[in-house]
Length: 249
Image (tube, rainbow, N blue to C red; front, side):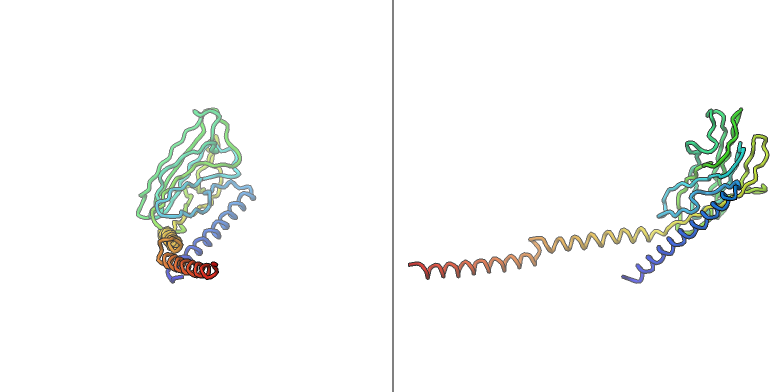
């Protein structure tokens, strides 16, 4: 195995280890908040590894242990040199799903070039009319990203500038609901991982072709063997005939 390949495999293993450890750490934080019965808004999954540059993937913004939620406004910050946000949706059966479809107002915005290093997105949703507020846990919104450069891990930060809590949650009387936030993280694997896979396929295919070729009847080795077998067969036939002639009366 070449030194280059060893370095590539070592980097992939280190990346996988970082991913697993970070996921365990972030998940333990979420569980701790949930067990404490605090209202927590969090990125789900807590860590995502994009397999290559140009990969499109989705992450949820979710909520746990909330009481009397009527509206929310979430702002998420991300590294725009690593990711591009491309879409924000409220998935089917999202947490603020009303009993009547007309009893919900929502809007979202993406500013991918907020500055040279960061993008920002926001999503706002509120129940309307006589819709009852919501209690419990669920998904608020789904964000779709496109990976643009290999790097990371890089944070997905929930932060509402100038507000006392990281996310603005409100009850039916517009009173703020206290909450904490658990940020997420993403990383994009370098392109050489894909290149290594392609090279491996090419090498494997070449070896198979060579092995098959050696067993082909047109391979020089097989032709030589055939010629040798033919000469042996003719020689055997000659001696057999000679012996037969000697024993004929």
